[in-house]
Every structure is written in C-alpha cells, then in structure tokens.
Image 1: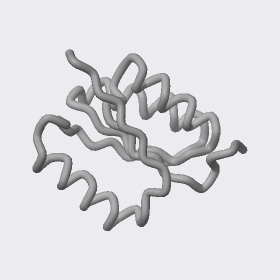
Image 2: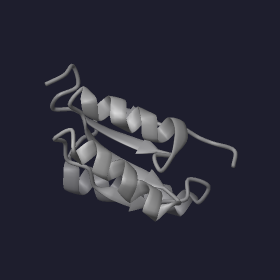
Image 3: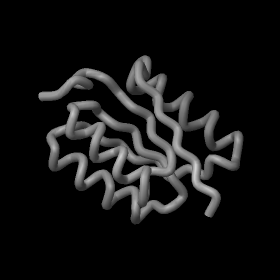
Image 4: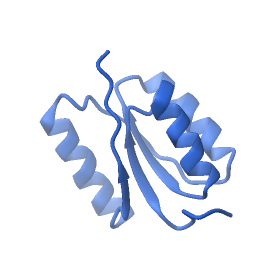
Length: 94
C-alpha cells in the first residue's frame, strides 16, 4: 500500500476542509485513522472516503476545546487501539 501502512493516525478537525484532505492523504498512504471533530455527519463522510481506500476508521465526535473530551478520546483509543505512533492535530478557528 503506502508509506504509512500499519500506522494509526489520530486526526482532529477531520470533518471538512484541510482535516478531511489530510485524512484522505493519510488513508491513501495506508494509515488507519481515528477521526475526531464536532460535526458527526461530516466525520461520517470523511470516514466513508477513507474506508474506500481500505483502511480502518473509527470516528469520535469530539470538541477539542473541551479538555475532558480530548482526555476521553485519547484514553479510549489508546486502550482499544493500542499505541498511536503517528498523531496529527489540525485546529481551525471557526
């Protein structure tokens, strides 16, 4: 597949724009993704495009401005997915 095959990327801001484009690029390179953003519908659309590339993509609606939500996201995914060797954070001022 690609250079990131076997890696897992946790990507925030993944429901649209640069976040969605980054998710597509990471999936194209074979990275499995954990997608987070406030917009659950947008996350599902991003996930569908990445799944079409043949990667695993759980989605977690998350507001990165809420510290407890970020802590829960990381704790949950580290427990269920194992170590996340590649972590990308994208923030938008919307």
